[in-house]
Amino acid sequence: MTEAAGRFLQFAETARKTRIPIRIAKATPATLALWDAHVQRHIHDAREFRFDRQWQWPALLKFHQVQETIVGLSGVRRASDIRLLQAFAARPDGNAYPVGQVLLACGFPFIRDWDAPSVFLWYLAAAPRPALHAAGLPPDLKLMRALVDIAVQESFAGGFEGRVGLHAARSRWNLAANRDLYNRYRHIGLAPLPGGLRASVGRRNDRRYFYLDPPLALDFAHRLDYLR
Amino acid sequence: MAAIAHLRNQHAALTPMPGDDLGERLAALAAQLFSADAATRAVERAFLDRLLRMLSLTPHEIHDLAVAGRLGDLLPPDPPAGSSEAVRFDDIPGWRRR
Image 1 (spheres, chains in turn blue, orange):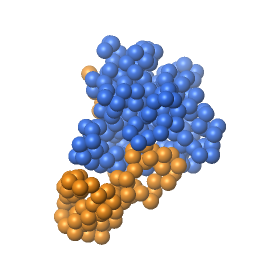
Image 2 (tube, helix red, strand yellow; image 1 turned 30 degrees about the horizontal axis):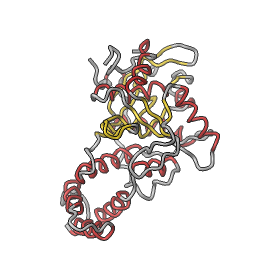
Image 3 (cartoon, chains in turn brown, green; image 1 turned 90 degrees about the horizontal axis):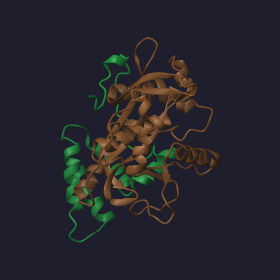
Image 4 (cartoon, chains in turn purple, blue; image 1 turned 90 degrees about the vertical axis):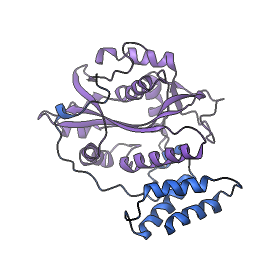
């Protein structure tokens, strides 16, 4: 573990290199309601393509919690700890505004080595520009690295040495969106799972899986140290 | 509860595996999820039917369906939204703060 390991970001950066304070917190029904009331409606109404347009976060959280409980009961593997964490910024009036959130499976088998535990990042969403603008926040806030970093820090904190896996969502018809998302994950330093490896039991590797192993995770974390 | 028996029987029909007690364990889980007075039998049965359908999917398949916007028929409806009253940024309890 490095000094940076297990420490969340305290600032998020804009495209103009300005910084605003952020705070990472575990979602509660009240803060999920904030997301639904102030962010999800902008996502639903966005003119551009959004993978998360119809995501129902409370239901997704409940589903994964139930399924992991059943997995644990079945004895197939140890149940992962399902965690929904949010990143908040301060509005000009001092109220908290959720700018992004991630649903994590902590203890999920690592996609490069099924015997090693990791954090699997099931869902990631960032507030769109109109939502940030409406909240009085910089609309050019850069959030993808900051949100993936939550998974990395949880992995360090859980003793998983930074191991993280995720799958880049895929649309059946919007190939440009598929390419864009794939390139964004690569751009921020995630490694694509090689084609010859299976991603998980019963799951075809469609070459859209990404991972951070311990060395990559350290490098990923170090690059964000100036925001911790 | 009748709904629990239904869950056990349906699981046995869907995945018959001699000697497998997964159905029993699912029934135990369902019993934990639903107290006897938590819901009407019809609501329990509807939820468990959906749960059974979900259990035949992997988390990866659920992710694919969520991205495609086709989860609505499978997931239980969102629980009633909590209050979306404003929370002060300074009052947000940071996760793992040192």
